[in-house]
Image 1 (cartoon, rainbow, N blue to C red):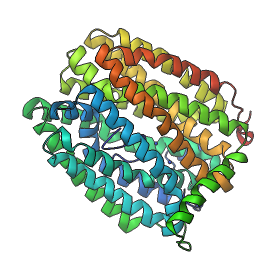
Image 2 (image 1 turned 135 degrees about the vertical axis):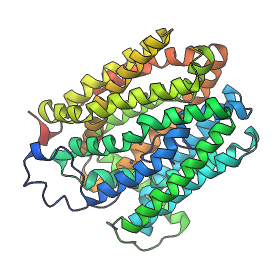
Image 3 (image 1 turned 180 degrees about the horizontal axis):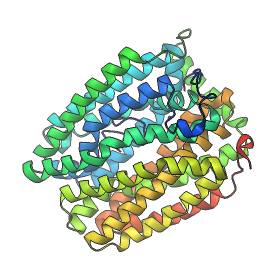
Image 4 (image 1 turned 60 degrees about the vertical axis):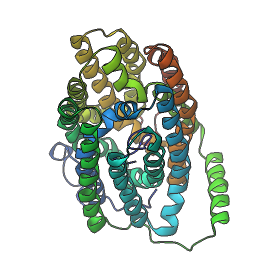
Length: 432
């Protein structure tokens, strides 16, 4: 959960607009001359997300610490995370259809601004009793998530998607190199509450700048369609989602199982990492921000090698190799006792994330038939979020018993998700 988010592309809220023409020069320039690959709409989404991320990266790593110091217990934090996931799951299912009815651009811009407003709400709430308001508002902003991610991937040539996702990730990761450290300094000098109030306010301010730019420059890729009643709309969501799943194919189901298992594992730990660092390991907030920056630096340096690896060995092999590190890294995290071990963990964590990100996103796009991609991407967003709900609640109770328990409990589902990945086949057009 970020400023109300489960997984999503922007800092304010992890994925369906219609096709966008590929870069006119994509098939002309030799690959060695175009390590960065971002067609126009993908570049606009990337650049505006990066501006927003400057403020978001100051606040989001410390969100649970802010909740705790406003008076929320760890169990309550788990329930807030579960509430966020439940709302975002519905919002992500709705997102693709809102884009159909309103048009892609209008839906992305409107709900991006809802996410921006959420930063300001966090900055001004007086105590933990008000946390429901920004959690709900930020979760509703997740409606635009499927539109964002599908717009990003569908603007790219399939064979260049790993490179395109790497380009997006490199640029969007830049604020995470320094902004979490700045957020930690705000906490160190102004306190856990006042320092983070400023961080959340800056998240809103940078969001206004980034999304205003997005509103002025983003191209419409799918014109508005005929409006339908609210009841027909929901019937259509359920009917079309079921129809898409019926024709999705074996590998789509396997990747969906992988996403669900991974989401359950992440749900056990995501809301409690900052508390574990600060409370159990005694790490100051500014040092935690530096660890986040070190992880981001490792990701930044390795994203293009990760894309190149995927292009050479195939998406499935690249994803399997990278995902093997996840359960191991989770286990080693629970053994870390001093700063040196934590630095090593953060770098290894960033390495695994970098090598997993571009090929996994590309694999997801490639195995889903284009005609149902919007609906399936919404399902890929919604079902893992639903799976994370019991994990987030359980994680709060486990942390209350012993802070290390949620992190140990996450290892088995990570192992299970890796075993599921082994059964997925390489997409046909990338088989070697």
